[in-house]
Length: 282
Ligand SMILES: Nc1nc2c(ncn2[C@@H]2O[C@H](COP(=O)(O)OP(=O)(O)OP(=O)(O)O)[C@@H](O)[C@H]2O)c(=O)[nH]1
Ligand SMILES: [Mg+2]
Image 1 (cartoon, rainbow, N blue to C red):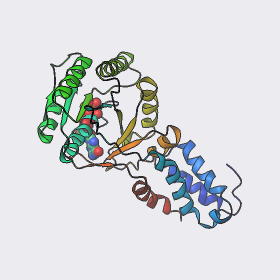
Image 2 (tube, rainbow, N blue to C red):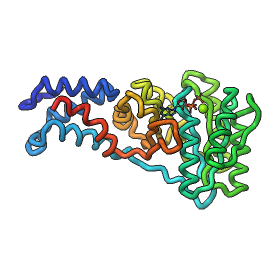
Image 3 (cartoon, helix red, strand yellow):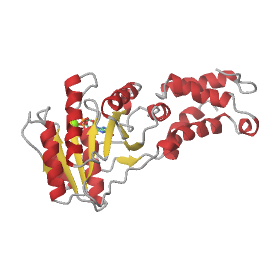
Image 4 (cartoon, rainbow, N blue to C red):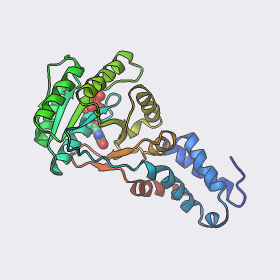
């Protein structure tokens, strides 16, 4: 850590600890603390809390990039990916409901053909959002479902096609190949598709979320992130590590199981919710 001069070192140490337990991670926490410690002149007079807030916002604001799923040329295709149980299907269902509410026509594709109950689960979300669901039988080729869905979405002039995929670990070589195949099929039908590869991460998995994202991003390219389960005890500081390390767009945060429990990511609000913890050391 750099020279801290007039700023109270024990205070900075305590702050660093709070950031780490909020899942910000060691590397990013150190970066933020160093920024405070090395602040000079007028900045230094702002005080630790204001400096921290500014540091967090500087990292997060570039990643506040709202998804605008509108394409006059054809369906906006969103491929939803992530490891098992993070909230992919739920997030997709919430998105379907919200896009419909906003006046868009929506279609769902049940490309999780791996888990027996997944197709049925997506069907329930389809009914809730009142939108068609393209499906095949359990065990069918996921890329084939995606193919049918894009063709159908084009034919029916659908605005947004949301594709659900099976949960997988990045270490499952064949399952990652399956995702690559889905992508290839989409690109073949529309060279600009998918228009969004949305990776869903579970806030309660802490630092693991960052390594999951890095691995998926390396394998298939991720264009946006949604962090779920922020209604639990997790603070979601992992988003700061994600923003600092990868700089990927952070699209949404999930705060519950209902259709309305999904919000576009707003850096200011997020930092505001995170800050009371850090203000404990003021
Ligand atoms: N509290 C809370 N629960 C959530 C949130 N998002 C999803 N869940 C719950 O997490 C559980 C798993 O959600 P799913 O949507 O089935 O997760 P998935 O990633 O599709 O799971 P697989 O398809 O099995 O990999 C369900 O019980 C959801 O209701 C959230 O933001 N908050
Ligand atoms: Mg699912």
